Picture 1 (cartoon, one colour):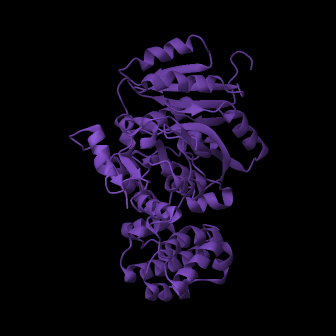
Picture 2 (picture 1 turned 60 degrees about the vertical axis):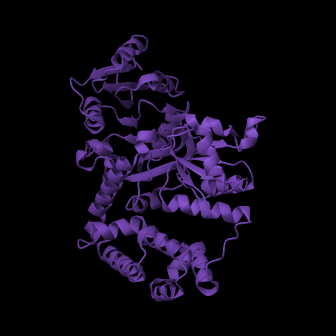
Picture 3 (picture 1 turned 90 degrees about the vertical axis):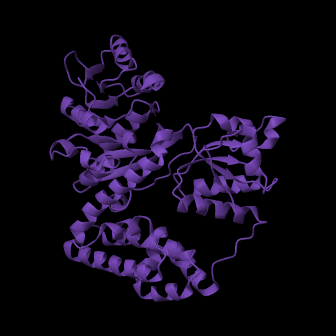
Length: 451
């Protein structure tokens, strides 16, 4: 790049009190194998020395451009200011505490340049400090419809054509804090194609405060609001409660309500046939499959029989495994899980975690139950992150389990997650009390998940 010539790619990073994570994050950007970019950083009135570190790093690399908010504006306003400061052709979204893998920009830039009809390319991510990963594998034909009910784009993994947002004035919306990125990608998906690479190209840091009950409640409310905004374009009469049940059908306990949800789905699909806003087949999968999955584990055969009329011929091909499991559970009942079978115990634990929408855990036990539980979490594409694995055997000798260094129970005092899953037969009735005795009282920290 000649002096004074703008790089094609602008890397956009908001910073607020990023502490020890800031320099590694910036270093991971500067060390990219694709080097033709500018790193645009806006410090949101940090008080921890982040700004001074930014100036020091910028003095050694002219690709870094540092700006500062006079007062703290918040993450949404700072991201939007970054858009205004960048006139680049491409934007890479980045956070101040995440780590880019070295080939991230090269792979994503090559994808966009080789696929001119695609305007956003995201990737899977490794969740730190837990070590698990996301497992989204969706091409454009599924992403737009999938975004109706959930955000499948990990924000700082995305690289996009700037024109997709710039030309239409699309920005992060402060009215839906906790889901502003979800709405941002929803709005862009209405106008252009997306792709999610199977590659893991980012280490995504999850903080304990992100998982607080108050923050999760706020995020869920904003999530429902965003999903409702877009679904109401198809069906103006749809309510917030109905949208919430489409997103999280496990919350439906009333047989009448589940039938009403299938009636609602029928009206949504009919409205889409008239308006042709979405791919009909993919839309049906997005909104019907979670309802059928909800019914598979339900004991009520009468309720299952009552929804047979909602199964279409195309459902057998697009959701064949789900439909097969549905009919098996209707004809033969829900399989009784045997607590002496590690696979069955692990499945029960996995269902408990999924139903409670728990996002991060530590596991007590490093045997067959834990092995099966880790398999369920990984194979089902779950976003449950495993921070650590503990076992009493680690008090005598250290050993590894599925890539984790197994720790003794006393080390639980140092973990950030509040959720401990008991995945062991060892002293089943005593384990919770033993953990509490090990760590001492008072004991407000952990939510024990056990059968």
